[in-house]
Image (cartoon, rainbow, N blue to C red; front, side, top):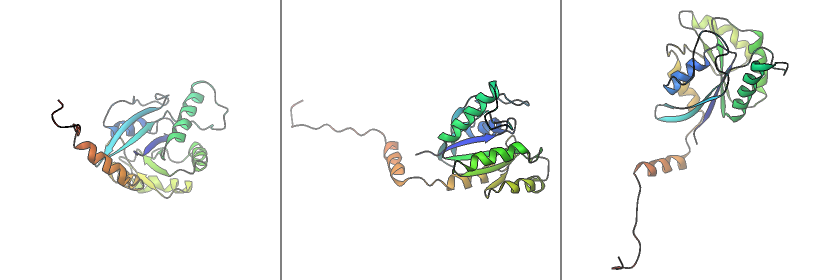
Length: 194
């Protein structure tokens, strides 16, 4: 079965940009202001001949205790629905802005899912990535990557590591191999009956 990965984080941290980069599409709208993505957006992606399903989300603002209203509540509800569907969570944060209260609150909620969480420190292009990542160690994640989604920096190593945690099922591989050979057809019956 294809792993399902959900992109989670605050609005405007680069989730849709990463979605477009990984799916090699422009299905997710991208602009330099928060709140453009509102619903879940699904896409199929391939990394080194390995397929997976990616879910883009609108993100969650600082208040995740249910006191939101309107569009922020809808975006958060869609994000948490994607989290429930996913096998693993790609938690994006903004390396330029640094760690903030909202990142801590989202971290607490993600930990309660007991799903693998990969911390992606995005927007490290043009800055010292090692310096940008330091504050984020406080969140306590062990799998941390520095990336620049817009430029594609760090994406290959990140996906190598993430997909290695989801080994392909041998039965699934055999079924795909069989299906790739085309349709097999057999005519069965007595001789000379038409």
